[in-house]
Image 1 (tube, each protein chain N blue to C red):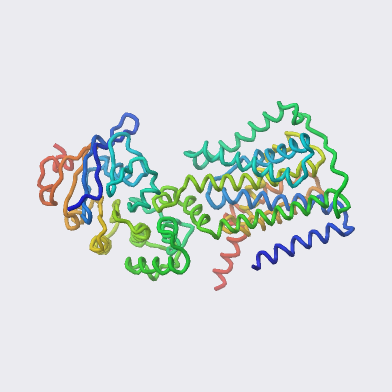
Image 2 (cartoon, each protein chain N blue to C red):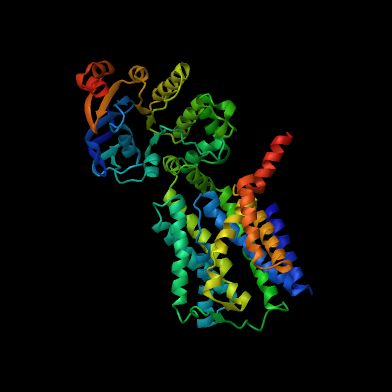
Length: 310
Length: 238
């Protein structure tokens, strides 16, 4: 109940700010931070709970973005339909990845997922319909209900997506599915011999995670009014999606949220005050710091601090 | 004695290596069977084929009259086959109690307070009640072995396969685990015990089967098997 109350308050606050006359850059940056929350929560369902490290995040994000673009170009479909289609398509990609990598674990699974990025990027680069290597310039719809600019509308959409993805991660963690995924992470063979249908759970985690990553990518073409494969399939998405749960802590749904808020906000500050190149350095430095000093993330640090203060 | 497990002409190869070569074995309901053999004889491969961790290439395995050779491991567990592992594989991110909640929810469909109560009862029977909320990293070797057995028992099995549950334990600890296995058998659970500690196998088993090079070379009462010249040759050499 408290979760839903806080979620409602967050959504209403964002709507309230979006209706105010706050600076537009605030929304431009807010979209990125909220998208980071979706990416981190979605990644953690497969990477954190089940222990399958997915380096193919840009493939799922890109699949969502290009599905949205296709629907926009073909039917001028509304944004909600674009997001739904992006989520369904990326979810299906996740399911197929799960099926094709059924026997792969550890680094081999990660390599298989990263190869997906290059496959998708190559496909898009060779598709004239999707704009090829040069990309597509888009015109945003002019009639936006309630909001002054389309970016403000997109931020509200993204906060709803963030709440949905965090709620999904929380539901999975607290359900028997979450316990099964943790068992898979700890010992797949022991899990299977304890009655856990490991393949089904892996497929479920791949599909849900993929769908949420696709949903996060779907509003990208409209957000930038432009889409091209090099930045859409940028591997920085994969590193960030992995870094955020590591920084926050992977054992609980709140960990990726904390990591996303810290890292994405810091990146935005660095981009504005120093340079956009420097924000990549921020990811790297924080990632190394947490892997070495606090491998269980901020949540682990809090747990240790609580234990030592007893 | 009614048969609960029937293994017929089961074979398994790893590349050019024959791990099991036409193994035939019947296990009676409620029986205590000891499975022995030198290292590499195929004991673990055989129980992996029974539990579903490996799929046998030839032959059939029937459990309670049902053909299970093609079933995945989790389906076999749901049908009543549980096992412990040679090297304990606890779910390390979970507490001792949570380890048992996994089979309780996935095999028996029990959750919430009822699951907690059943888990507590099983853990008490294993002498792990004081450790119920402990992390697995805080458990000693004998406690990890007991946790393996407790987790297997949470699946309410008809057949329990104990894979070297006493390896690395001291004298009193061996007796403790042995007593647990005997009490489980008293509850009607069929037990297949793989063990290198001969004293334990001989005192526990009603029947002993000896494997060598993927084939059964001898079966009988513990005394018959110990006296068998093929068994002595397999262990001691020519």
